[in-house]
Amino acid sequence: MPKEVFLVELWRIYADAAEEIRVKRYKDYVKLKARLKHYIYTIRVPSDVADQLIKEYKSKNKTINEY
Image 1 (cartoon, rainbow, N blue to C red):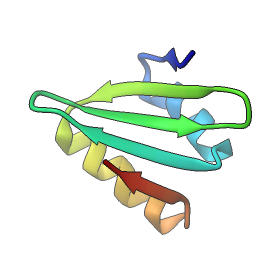
Image 2 (cartoon, rainbow, N blue to C red):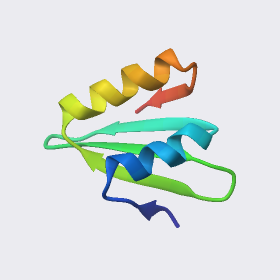
Image 3 (cartoon, rainbow, N blue to C red):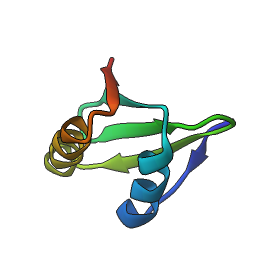
Image 4 (cartoon, helix red, strand yellow):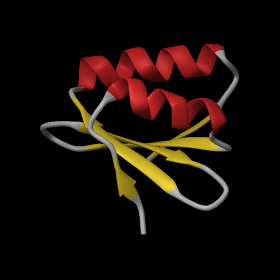
């Protein structure tokens, strides 16, 4: 079962340790999912914040899958 976090700073900690980051775009928000070994940590953010986070983690050479 995925765990949802509500602070971007907390999600970044999980994303730094993640094997991959998954992106699901909805009409009103973007859901970012950090896949770790045992859990998936998710966060819902506006699209402008999500684009900034995606750009940041692409520069860190993380695997990003968009659905």
